[in-house]
Length: 170
Length: 170
Image (cartoon, rainbow over all chains, first blue to last red; front, side, top):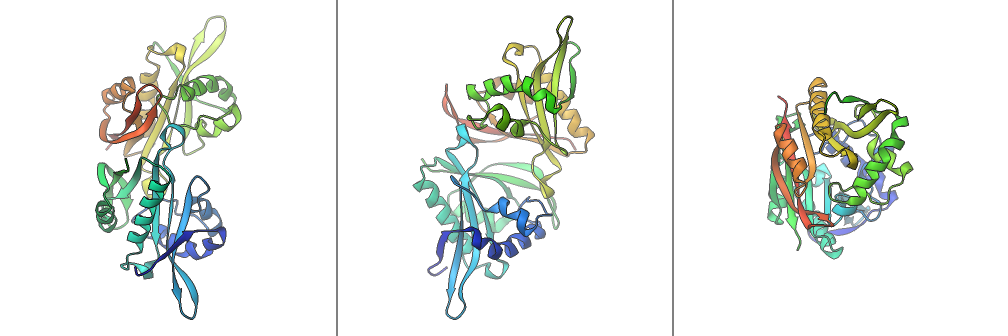
């Protein structure tokens, strides 16, 4: 991405996020979100409230204004005695794949956790056949802590494992 | 436990569960539930709705009627493409520890998942210093898939790991 603009998402951004959120969930290869969400019921699954945060990555188009290419949500992975470890999820618009949107959002998320004093970031369920994601997180320093065998039902690959990945920040 | 009675919990059981739920959460050694719950806000954190279920283990007392000694909640660990793997949590009343309540509930939970066609059970966050629990789950066939280092803040032990544990059922 050349000069991506990443900013905190507002409720008004949700209608622009929803189409690629829904397309990703319906494809069913990368996330175990409910598959019967609507634009209204889906909102609460993606738009975080403090202490969490949802961001969007957008590009400026000369004539049309800005366009959202991807989004990430982040925050504490668990409450109370687990709230020093963060977590995050990522969605990239299908038409923007391969342009580094995921990497830019990933780097932003790591920095956000550093800035907020988290001691690490845990991804709870990275689908093992989502090799682009696994490679990306590895390149940011995440390691696979373990893999729950067959925990995800992939339309293409059948039962595949879910990686727990972790990046220590201290 | 000699002849434990385990039955589905109803909303009327919550006031009898709350004291040992709260004591366990306040002790802060085994679960990352929010520590500021009340009897009202805590209810939704423990009393599952279908397809999940909450059960209680109770004993009959000759003169006083029945007394609840422990509780477990169970259900799909993730929605949609992850809903073939279950999960569960357990709470035992402090005065009933060492009597096999946890084991009886654990065996019940494993059977419940078998009966409902789950392909495995995943525990997402077993505190590594909770050695009684780790030993119990191992004795029921669970294995440690991986350990997220320092992911739990124990009042007694400081930052300790959280085990992901898994029992395949197919």
